[in-house]
Length: 505
Image (cartoon, rainbow, N blue to C red; front, side, top):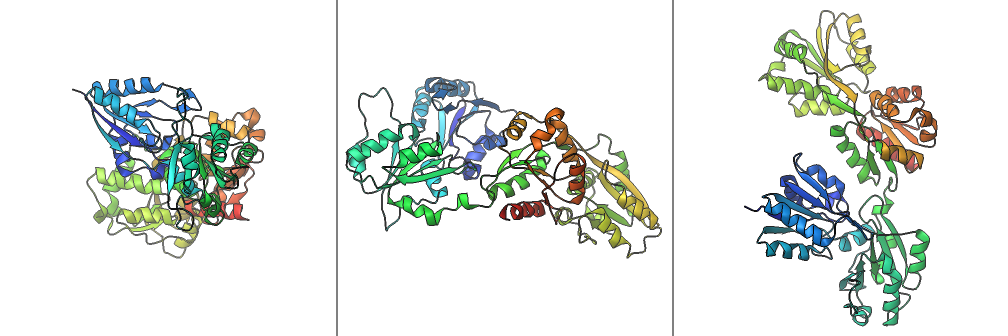
């Protein structure tokens, strides 16, 4: 029995522009066959068991011919798989989706079409160019920028489109730009007509070049624009100067390395990306829960003997409540215990688990917790401190000096993550990376270990370094990094704010 094929539009490049139905299809797929222009971030929604097949076409370099792609889709579907054919933009806007469906129909294979946001609309919008505007035009025409070379004559009515009076949008036409402008001019379009090219529209590498029909070829050559580009021709191009927004964001064009653990990086990546940065994820640590949780389980089982429960990180909260859940307990068991959290993120995570912190110090470091507890009578009090292996000893040492008994239990370990270093090292060598961010001391030491020791100084020369707080910054300096940015508020939000302030000043 054959499977089913979903032809899914991946959108124009910004992964946030894919539809919810598209994400659902990707998550359910046994096989995903994806294009060059489909954002690789969308593959993160695939199941672990799913087979991923790249079938991209880039500048004439075809991994698979269209006939072979058609045959591959049919083959995988006839084997009983749920197949997602993930195509950049919309499958039916110059995406050859119709040809792929015809191949399925011929084999009586069930299919569905999931439309996508076409780059023909999205790229101009991200460049600040409205394709229609009642003071300029009420029509827009989408045209392929490269017709089938085997055609004996063009099927495009150049005289008609040159005189529509509306906006013209050419897809995949940068190589034929000179031919396009020549034919439009030849058939009566004013050489002074505004024109624009948008490269990699909706992504953090977006580039926009504007000019006129007469100058745009030279403008594009001077800027070095290559495929993929959208060509927009019409009076609406003049609106870009007051409507451009995407390229005006503070971090636009900045390439920033995020070294945080993969499962924790998404929040930081989203914040930086929303500010315009291109994030290169290089997770150098991984949070590992010990195989033997006996000590933590025993502490939870006898939680009634503790007076205080102190959390120093979100990870500690997660592990603690995970073990409570596994033992069939909930926050009712903590009703008599007073609690403290280092930092608002940790307090928020506690609150999400139904527990409010009694003490959240103003400064997000162990010394501030010590200061807060100095105001209390801690003599004879029992404190449970579940936290990371290798954490600084300041907190338990000072609490013991106050007369408390502290049970420090290893809840998790930040271990070195195996990471593909080639893109990172290449970017550092070529100075295409602007900034490296560190969110803990372990990210510093593990990141340095990834770099060739004999090239270290050359690789980090001129690279801006941002640290989440003074302790991390000190570790970075001790390891030979010149720290440019240190957050005043030791949180991801605080670090992002410090990065913005740095670039704005």
